[in-house]
Image 1 (cartoon, rainbow, N blue to C red):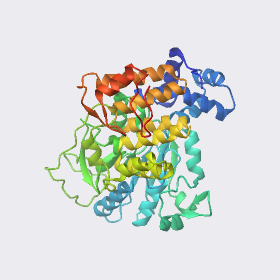
Image 2 (tube, rainbow, N blue to C red):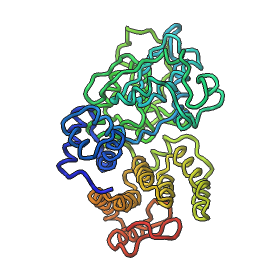
Image 3 (cartoon, rainbow, N blue to C red):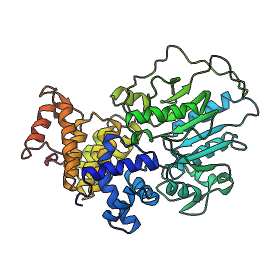
Image 4 (cartoon, helix red, strand yellow):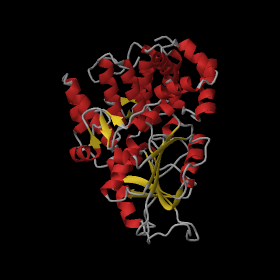
Length: 448
């Protein structure tokens, strides 16, 4: 794929996305626009040049097609199941008798999260009469959610009991129409629009903030917090936990994950009657926060992740990859990545995809590693190599600069997180001298 977007074109596309869709892409996602433009053009049956002209003119259909291709879109039923367990327990313990919950799924995409919330409420007898709203900036995604029909990929983590109770028919399976009637869907721009609900018991906005610049993240977080009642829960993605510094939030560790709770007002609210809430221990420390789009320290990942797989799971994945058992290696690495939020697992998935010739999948996996840890130098270096192979020289050069910036002040012997042990000095040499790259899990040169 040859590059399509000039610097001027890319800036125009970014401005159109921001103006029409409210999307202000984080720096590490801007370089996805070239590939997204080609894929969106193919979907619409036009050339990339024609789509580019439509996007620059503000054509809504072209912008939404581009947006759909630019974002990761990784969603499935009961993703991060601990979040739903926290919600169920909190609502059962805190709702006054007869009160019905009000929940907003912000950035609901194709609806898996929204319907998971409905199922979670049904399981504890709180669905009837509840307010459940799903919103997204994309009408394409909302139309998929309205159809409420899902294939095996969306259902891959769903227990048989839930599958039998809440779905009808064979694949693609239809969400029970009685449950579909309990939810509402509408278009909403998180950046530009006020909250569509207020006095919510919970707001779910998971793995959405990664698409925004830090300044935009803070504006969106204020919108989310404004939608909550005092004591209501804000549930973000594990890689986003700890954001919201300066807002009226307290971070709580529940079910081996982190959720935020809106602090009680100084005067008790008069609009809704609530049972007494358990007090949060003052000794429970809030995790360190920063103004960037997500925390990247290993300690924060450990706090926000659920129970870990056995300690040798990643080692077994690497051993399987070296032995040529790639299906086994991929399965183990994906489990480690999803369960432990370990960036190195996604680097291994990237390498496995590259070895199969699946360049786009390799790039996506490398980016997922960087979503979890923006300071992962080897992630930027891997992405640089892949983007150069994809023909995106500008983005590859930027990724290389990112990697070098992260190691420039480290001593040569400093060990870096990666699939295989590598030092800062070795990575600097590899990035500066293409003929002598570090070795990948097969013993071949990987970074050039």
